[in-house]
Image 1 (tube, rainbow, N blue to C red):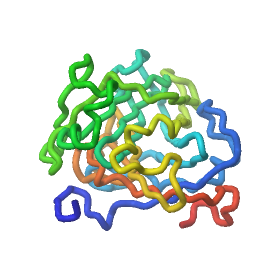
Image 2 (tube, rainbow, N blue to C red):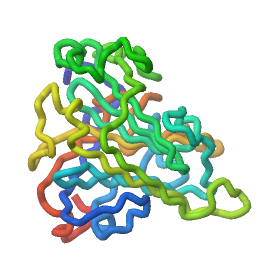
Image 3 (cartoon, rainbow, N blue to C red):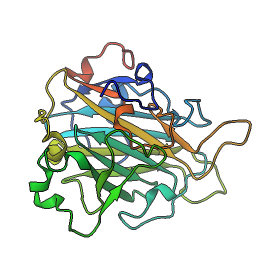
Image 4 (cartoon, one colour):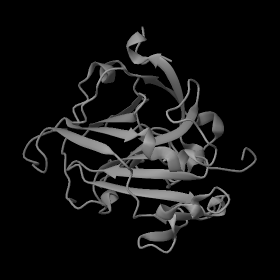
Length: 281
């Protein structure tokens, strides 16, 4: 795949080390456990299209143990709003944050708004559907409702071609929660923002890990591709060049569906509590 052209230069794709935990995490959105305080934060999210630093802070952290992958978001937002309350509504029509996790031949999309309403899709590259074994799994039969072709958003000429989107798929055992530091949908005051906490069981990632038989949970030194995003229903006023979409690692295209642009997440069996200089590489 190195000879294929993607909008993100390989040397600009970020790297991050995800450390192991032995502390229990309560999925309540507060991100107040000691492990979250110690965990390295991502760099500040930048504009998805141009890599510029936007008006508000957004950060993510990733942790893991034998049972789950944990992802946290810190979202600065002076006016926290949300409208959608039905699961699998088009959450990107609200202010939201999004998580994408890629396997070799498929990837998972998760979106959540400040109400805690979620949206999920599992995408399989069409050229890998048969040869990677997905066609043999009942949950990925193409004749089910909610299964549609997908060609990308702004980067429609992906070298791997189209995807098959399974909008009927739910991540097994997923837990997520939101905490609003302020007053949701009340613009009479100013808010600090909101935080998101997600636990994704490794057991639920079998479909992502299947094509290359990657270890679940990961082994020390294993690398996954994961990106985190924030999409807003507003843009910073000119002369700022704010696309309305921000990312941990920018894609330089209006499309979050480019796994080749996702950060490299290096899994370490070192306990996060052993870090002497939190946040440093």
